Length: 89
Image (cartoon, rainbow, N blue to C red; front, side, top):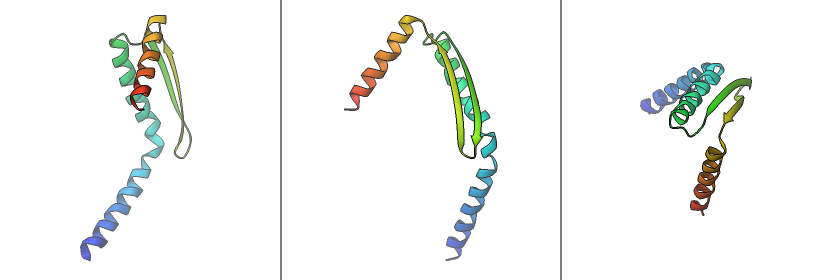
């Protein structure tokens, strides 16, 4: 009984604390996205990229990605998407 109240209080504290960082999440998302795209660029899966993440409202974000691909890279990306989608069925 005491443990239930303590875990309930801890959970509510964590939820309130977690939401305090919500306004900075676009920066975190941009960081993670740029990291993955840089990895793809180093593997020559893409030629170049630009990203921009904006907070539109609470829990609403806009992510703009501009990927530069050669024709061969585009074919490989489409091929991978088709194969991956067909494996799900």
